[in-house]
Image: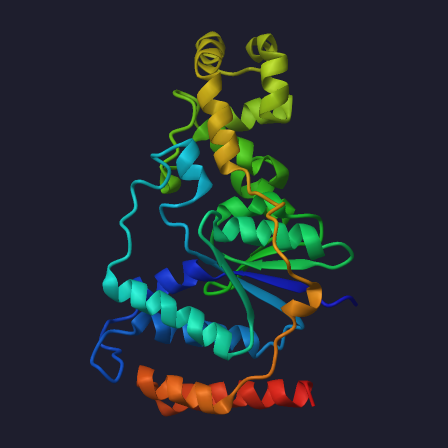
Length: 300
């Protein structure tokens, strides 16, 4: 069987740790490192499965993403990280590097776009496991791919995405453009909620086809169809703008090969220094050392 490719939406698990683990976990300066602690444990659990190909994608474009140029209100409902969280985000990237794992972050693109591009580059002939809690990434799924919410151990393929949202995986971006996405501060088309978006996409397939034959909307059993038609015509520009925002970019220009995604040897001394600085306990140190030994044996 072809080894799967693991693509990890790293930032979502950092934030999860930051908000769910008490800030009583502190480094050798007494500063909170609860997110670093939780993220390191998450990484360990994943790497202990010995994936052959894996990459971690980080969000660095919190207000510099190209989507903000298109729609300045995009994610404007979210607070920017404070100084401690910024520090912890940097340390999470540092431990990722120290563990020899391929990782990327870009100022103009989100983790979703990095994952989408790596998926496009390397998915041919192999299943892809996207480790995330983000519904947006469902649009990337092919028949053998899965979304894996690692913390909850919930797996979803295209069939589960269809069952949950009522649309096919490849329709997720258009579904969010029509229905809106409060998490990302995308309002969608006024009056077109989730149920209406599902009906529209079931008939038309996508937004482009909807606008090519919008008169048909009155024949699909949609409640308030005449008003919906008028609304969609009046806000076509916004709907297409939201479509551009909700679509994951899968063609970022970046130099990376499949072999880059093979974990590389680690430095035991650097990891030990990191553990000292983060004030990690014995159990985490032992697990990190074991990962290091596994890495060395695989590359010997």
